[in-house]
Image 1: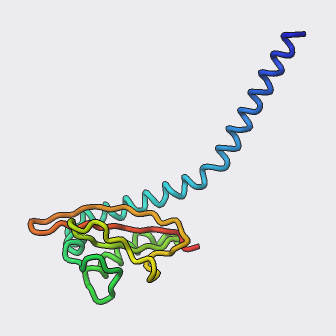
Image 2 (image 1 turned 90 degrees about the vertical axis):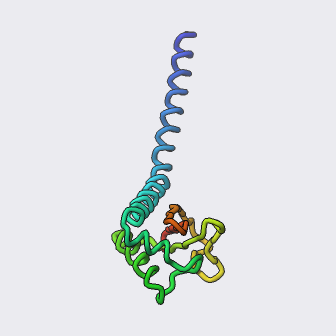
Image 3 (image 1 turned 45 degrees about the vertical axis):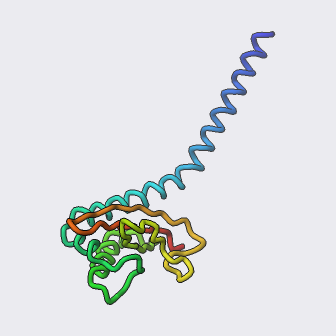
Length: 145
């Protein structure tokens, strides 16, 4: 009788562990999949900008810190490249900043709806240099809905 009680206790503990593992695998993948998707979009977009000499030049010659400016041809080309790279993800929105190496804290102005206040915003940066300039390009992504 003592062996039976021990076996039933072990069975109950195993059942509880399996239930817990099952619940955790069902609940967590959605968030991590979203983060992985956003991270890979950012990495791909930044890689395109980093490897394309024309886009690198646009980053190095862009106005510093200001949000998207439709009169700046450098920013227009960067904007269009990011838009093309994210267009298959209809629920995503984006923006970017270009910072100087001396002022790496050129955070976007949240008050002017540059970035939504009530969303999870994912940011990645790359640093680009030429002989006379160093710039930090920061890409922000978030879900519209």
